[in-house]
Image 1 (cartoon, rainbow, N blue to C red):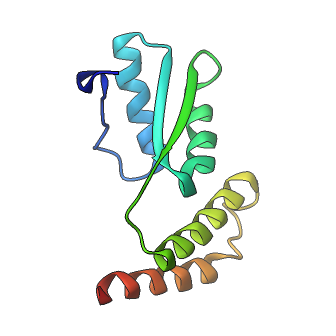
Image 2 (image 1 turned 120 degrees about the vertical axis):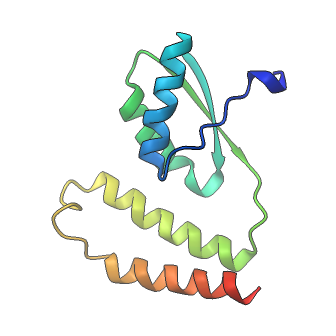
Length: 117
């Protein structure tokens, strides 16, 4: 793969928007095979959202990359990703968010770690 074969979408504010904006780019080029690169802790949710946005007409492949997070940061983010993934698979998540308090606590802890360094 050549460097100019890589297109990074940088407009989105979340994973769902990332999938939507990527689809627009990919459709404009009439591509059908896509390699999505994301963090290991994020791949499950990215896979779910991208496949829902793109549908079955596309060949989506996912590859993980390394990050520079501390072990504490990585553990907190992994816990938050589990909550987000669980909510995606729970059809009632949009009505009642029983893990909202847990998510806020994890995020507060993560932000405290980030601002301390």
